[in-house]
Amino acid sequence: MKLPVAILAVFASIAVTIDATVYFKEQFLDGDGWESRWVESKHKSDYGQWKLSAGKFYGDAEADKGIQTSQDARFYALSARFEPFSNEGKPLVVQFTIKHEQKIDCGGGYVKIFPSDLDQSNMHGDSQYYIMFGPDICGYSTKKVHVIFNYKGQNHLIKKDIKCKDDELTNLYTLILNPDQTYEVKINNEKVESGSLEDDWDMLPPKTIKDPEAKKPSNWDDRAKIDDPNDTKPEEWDKPETIPDPDAKKPSDWDEDMDGEWEPPMITNPEYKGEWSPKKIDNPDYKGVWVHPEIDNPEYTHDVTMYKFEKIGVLGLDLWQVKSGTIFDNFLITDDVKEAEEFGKETWGVTKGPEKKMKDEQEDMERKVREEEEKSKKDTEGGDEEEEEEEEDGEEEDEAEEDGEELEEDAGTEEDSDVKEKDEL
Image 1 (cartoon, rainbow, N blue to C red):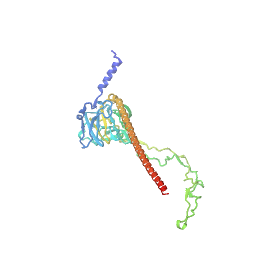
Image 2 (image 1 turned 180 degrees about the vertical axis):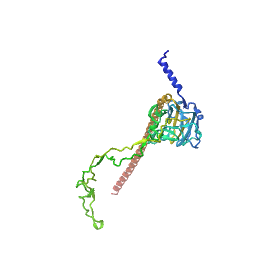
Image 3 (image 1 turned 30 degrees about the horizontal axis):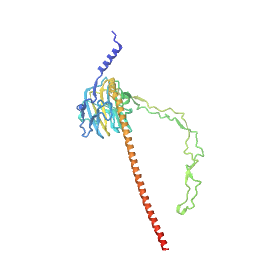
């Protein structure tokens, strides 16, 4: 009996789901319950404190709650344990969301994956980890995604520059490490980088090296151009760079006894042609650039297990932040890429739109408040100016009245004087 294609597709989907293993998932949906699952390191006495928060803006008040850094200029050290596992023969997917709603100026936003023997109470910056992954921002120059793998006890940084998001919204970061030694980095469920461990990290010695026995032949001419042996310098070429100014005249008040012998100032020689050099021609003996021969590197050995980590058992947040306020949420460690993609859609994918809408509304409201405050301030300043003008007008009127009274008094005095003069006559 043949089953319909739709039913077969459902069975296939169920099979994929059954095969997927989720090693660690944390969404902070049970209030303060997270505090029993996460351990704060005691390596330092002044580590920054974490709090549960959805932040100032969010898509869902409950679903968007995560752990948030709450103190400026602090180191943070927090970790959660899960059942140890090995990623041998299967993909390893590390995923989480992060929101720098504080307009972060300098601070880490990455996670570390540790072996299960980590002492969580003593976790610190030098604790050996397997993987370090996530954004790191500091000023204008550092805005990158770290992808660091530990190989044979040494941490190796990726040789590529992967730019991280530097906005204030929640972003989804995903690292996929495959058993075929390839990797992929996704931001917001979109691939931003990929490649192979051997090409993009210096974990292994180079496959080939320069042959130490090989040397460039003594007669090897690698000059593409040479001076023309038939080119000669013209006789009239050599002219001084500067000459005495022919238009300069000795000042009339120049005293040679006091000022010394007068010399005209120097000016650029218009006939100066610079240093002569013969023209270049193609070198007839040119053999090209000599390439140092290479041989197989005897120290190179291909390692098909570079990707593999045994007893993965702890996820940690070991970072420094100058300006606090970063929110971590929706942690996932699994062996299924599709599972991680779907989980990202169900969490970040659902709330990203409403979160941006709420942020835009808040910013619009803040802008209107600022405009009202500025308008009110201008109105107040305008009222003060009118009062000052009224006071000045009043003072001018008082001065005018006083001037009038003085004129009247002066006029009366003049009349009295005239009467007196007539009487005397």
